[in-house]
Image 1 (cartoon, helix red, strand yellow):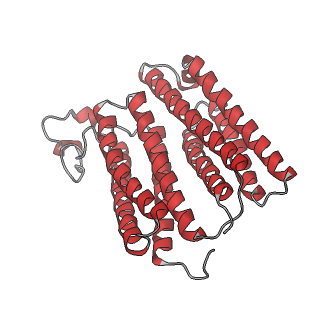
Image 2 (cartoon, helix red, strand yellow):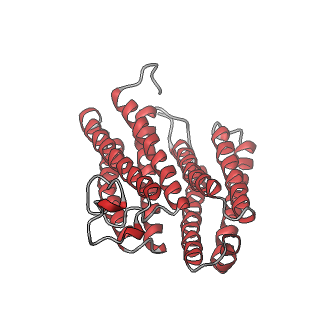
Length: 302
């Protein structure tokens, strides 16, 4: 049951989860702006911990043609935010040990998030080393999504305590399947973006780049409609049962609709960068809403 006054762990867990979502948004901005290689090395940027002020300050091993201040600082801020999130997750894990060491659902979930954030940092280095190869970018995104799902789990448990709404296996199972399909669809979306970047780098016009993706793009679109149909079916089922979960199912359905709408905007507006950032952010929020719905549906009344 939610208390009138938040505990220190609840406050920290909320801030950490929100900041992690913001990092995903900034990551989408980095990808949409083409700033992924704004710093061509890792963990440093042009060989320094603090980015150089101008191309004249570059070490001799770097080509001045690589220097773009806007892209460099966009990527560097993304890295700084990643470090901040790592420290916040570490602080959350310490707080979980201090205040919830006898609640394994909170303690081990936050510890798992902390371990994964270290792995995520290493993956970020591999993304740069492999020059934004689609498969490693996909892995990077999936791990980020898993981290934020773990944080959502711990935050939910901290607020729910031992009380909760009565749930049934059917509701939880259907939501779990929806989460799985959404994650696969998001993975296909990252692959689509990788193919688009390859086409753009090859000189293909922006308004023609999507057409070069082919079958992978069709799979991505088809799965988006599978997610929408699944969300609509789940909502109708919960309405028929007069379930207390109906409000969250409407949130999931609304996000699924918005996600498809933004996808259509990208497809017919020459891959508008702002739409790309919104598309990725909505995908992470959709998965988050599905996760909260799953957590609510599986709790049993005491």
